Amino acid sequence: MRLLFAGTPAPALTALRALLDSRHEVVAVLTRPDARTGRGRTLHPSPVKQAALEAGLEVLTPARPRDPEFADRLRELAPDAAPIVAYGGLIPRALLDVPAHGWINLHFSLLPAWRGAAPVQHALIAGDDVTGASTFRLEGGLDTGPVLGTYTEAIGPTDTAGDLLDRLAEGGARLLVATLDALEAGRLEAVPQPADGVSLAPKLTVDDARVRWGDPAAAVDRRVRGCTP
Image (cartoon, rainbow, N blue to C red):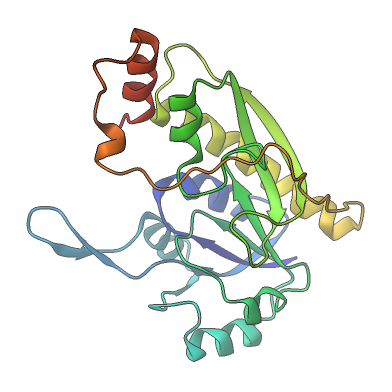
């Protein structure tokens, strides 16, 4: 299949590389614009943009995905599917149906648990024993679309968010490729998410990372690991 890959931070690189090694064709990459980082506040490309340029891929960096120029280019590319991993922007409803198989989101939780920007961190802080990754078809709601595939991952007693995310990125990349393979073969049916078991994982704030010394020791330990790095 012809793919438009959307992603921005380093955890998305594993999925991009797995797709480049698959039988599918990545025709372009969508990522966030260069951002100012570091003490000098100099502009730096996203990790996904750097990898895409090294691979010789076309890179699209609209300020907003609803920009008309991006919409026009997406329709010109006519991708069969648009896998998306931690892109960091809202895809407008008008563009959701442009790829024949839709936008296929890889999310690092077992949906409907931990919908939102920081599922790995919230799973650790909450004390979950098991997490995983889900592929689902993007729709208008926040991580509410029908699920295409899942895989599970045990959470170890000393895992940090960084440790766990590394493993989920690897397992999730394999899941994403398998999902696209099955979609292409026509042997995959999307399953609506259940109404029960929904939990939210908003982006962490500075206050979320502040240790509550009055909490039980186990809760303090989970918060420190969930906010590391």
